Image (cartoon, rainbow over all chains, first blue to last red; front, top):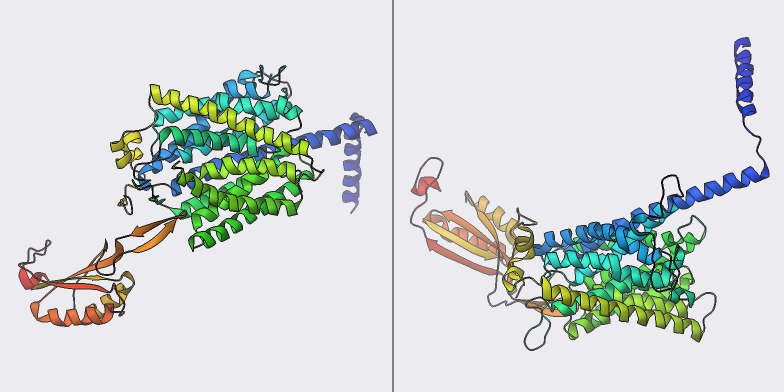
Length: 443
Length: 112
C-alpha cells in the first residue's frame, strides 16, 4: 500500500513538472485551439466527401456498362478511367486556374495553374479544395461517356476528355462558382443559386452529351427506316442498378460535401438529397408503369438519378417537403424526356441527357421557385438566365469541339467495328472471354 | 440405335431428367437454345420502347439409346414435359449409325 501511495505522489510530481513548462491556457488560446479543431474537421469532411464523389466514377462506369452491350464493356471502363485520369491532369494544369483563379472581368480565372497557389509550408487548404473540385470536374466529364457509348472512337474521346476538363467545364464554372476561391463570376454576382452544381456540373455534362450524341448520330440499328425505335438492350441490369446505388451513396458526398465545412447544415442537405432521390425513383416507376404497362427498371433507376441531379442545386436552400416535390417532378420529367429524345432520334443509350441536362435545368429552376428565404421574379429570372447561359455556352462549345474532332482525327468508329464491338476494335480484347457473347435481340 | 432430341420448356428439365434416368437412360446432353415454332415470340418493353422477342428460350436435350427403348423414352419425355399450353416443344427421333467411346474405342451398343 505504501509503495502505491509513494508511486502516485511521484507520478503527480512528474506530471506537474511537465505542465509547468507550458503556458497556462487563456481564453484567447482556447479560442484558437477550438478554431483549429474546427479547421481540421472542415478538412476531414471535405476530403471524405471528395472520396465519396470519386466513388461516383465507379457508379457511372457500372451504369453505363450495364445499359450497353457486352461487346463494348471494356471500352466503357477505359473511357471512365481515362476521363478521370486525363481530366485530373488537365484540371490540375489548366482547368482549376480558369475556374478559381483571380478573375477581374468575372468571365475567366487567370491564376493558380498547376496548383501554383500552394507553396510548401503554406496554407494547404488549396489542396483540399482542389481535391474536392477535381472530382466534380470528373463527374461532368464522365456523364458524357454514356450518351456517346458504343460508337465513339477512343482517341476522339481522349481529346474530348482533355478539352472538357481544361476549358468547357472550368469556364462556365468560373461564372457561377469562382468566388468560392480566388475568383468571382458575373453570374454568381447576380445571385445565381447553384449550391452543389445542378447546372455547373450536371447540365454542363448533359448538354455536352447532347452535342456529342448529335454529332455522332445514332447507333446502327437503333431507329428503323419507318422511324420506329428498335431498342438495343443493355447487357446487365444488375450492374446498372449497382451503379445507381453507388451514385446515390456518392451523392451524400456531392451535396453535403459542398459546404466544404463541417457544420450542422449537412443534416438537412443529407435529408433533402435522399428524399429527392426516393421521390424521383418512385414517380419514375409509376410514370413508366402507367405509360408502358410495367414498372420498368431502367426508367426507375434513371428516376433516382434524376431526383439526385434536380436536388443538387437547391439542396441547401429548400425544405424537405420541397425536396420531395422537386424529386417527384424530376422522376416524371425524366421518363418523358427519354421518350422525347428517342422521338427526335438522338440516341442516348443510358439517358444521360435526360437525367443530367434536362433535370439539371429543372433543379436549378426549382432552387429559385422553392427557395426557403422567399422567391421573386428576379430570383427566378437569374436562375433562368443561368440555365440558358449554360445551355448556350456548353452546347455551342461542345458542338464545335466534337465537329473539329470529327473532321480531324474522327469521332466515330467504322460500321464494321461498331458491329463487332469496340472492345475488339479499339482495345483488342473481350470483357467476358469465358462466356459466349450473343447477339441476342440485336437487329 | 436411336438418338432422341427434344426441345422443351427450360423449367421442365429436372422432371424430364429424373424420369429418363429412372427408366434406365445412361446419359443426357443438354443445351440452352432459342427458337420459335407455333408459339411465336412475345413483346417486351425496354426503356419505354416495345420490341418483339422472336426467339424464345428453350432447352434441348439429346439422348442416345438402344432402339428398343426409344418409344418408352419418347412417352416419358412427353409425359414429363407437357404442360398443355402452347410452346411445350417437340421430340425428334433419329436413326443413329454408330457411337464411339473416346476413352476405350468401344463402338455400337457397348459405347452407349
